[in-house]
Image (cartoon, rainbow, N blue to C red):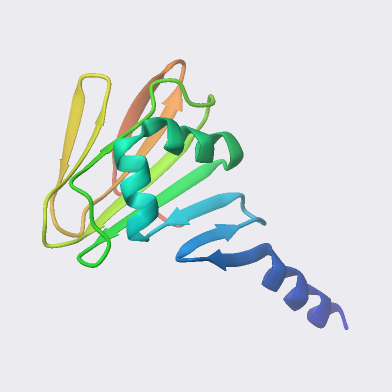
Length: 128
């Protein structure tokens, strides 16, 4: 019975909405659909809204869901984390302040907002 309850709880903790996945248990959002990518590409304030709601936002860019540039918001919530992975054949750049990070194919970066500024880390492990 305990295992059944745990399975039901995990089922409802992870839901998927039009290729945007929410993991309520670990409080993160995964964006990997064209319409949401286009929205956050053109309007960093929209990415900020996601960061106000979730501890982490994971962005996955692929050949079928691609944008050339993602701009990080200038004033997200302290401790906000954005993880970006490029699996597309086309270039991807993430920009913030005066920094432009160009991604190579299959590269990942973690961007963390601390003490009023973004920092970046190449690659990342499991989501915690």
